[in-house]
Amino acid sequence: MSKVAEGTVPYKGYKTYYKIVGEDKAGRPPLVMLHGGPGSTHFYLEPYELMAERYGRQLVFYDQIGCGLSAIPHQGDDFYSYELWMDELDAVREALGLARIHLFGHSWGGMLAMMYALRCSDGLQTLTVAASPANINTWLLEARRLVDYLPADMQGALWRAEETGDYSDPAAQEASDEYYRRHVTGCARPWPECIQKSFDMTGECYGVMQGASEFVVTGKMRDFDVTGELHRLTVPTLLLSGTADEATALVMKESLDRIPTCEWALIPGGAHMGHVQYPEEYAAALEGFLVRHE
Image (tube, rainbow, N blue to C red; front, top):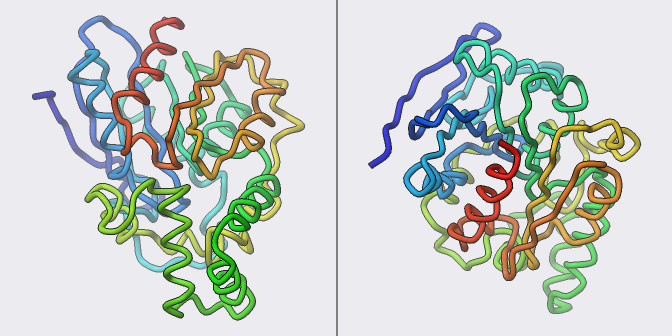
């Protein structure tokens, strides 16, 4: 059983929850995990904890401010920003003495990781961008393309919900569940506990940054695009995704074509949360990359 240490870091007058899993006795940099959302939690990334037991890797998870176990009272929209969460990562690193790290981000976490590395790559041994877009518009176009493969009645239910903003209709719920089964969770309900727990604890910042649903971005991320900056990244970078992922090959290729020191691991059958479906395969791909750059 791997050693687990939990605590909080003061941030913006609130507390950021963290969990450290494992001990790296070889003196290697820890793997810092950024969850998605914005507004999700670290819980759905817990399958990666097998890396502590299997490979002797130390992992640092934390819930971003306003999310999960770092929940805070209601805030105005102005509170939430890219800078808020980039500065928080700096605060976590400073508080825990993480001078040199492997940085991993999944979905929104990968977007955050790219922005963080572009702002300052000091102390970054590697960067892993898992199932994340470099341009939100490409992500949305691909999501709409994937919806087009659903049965016609499900397509109609989803687009009616988008027009009205009402997702409570049973037909829209059924269509959304089918999309999630194919491209997000990789399984039907009931979802694995780590996924359900993250969905249940989604923070208000999801609405502020993303919007009402997976298919339309009306929040602050609507203009997200770092494609013009990715050529500046010099840290060794792994792109990680699955063949059934809503982060499709086209989404990932925008980063692959622009990051100079980049490689891509594509896991057969993996959906957006493919690491829950195939934990061994995702962990092995990630560990293999980390070892090559230590």
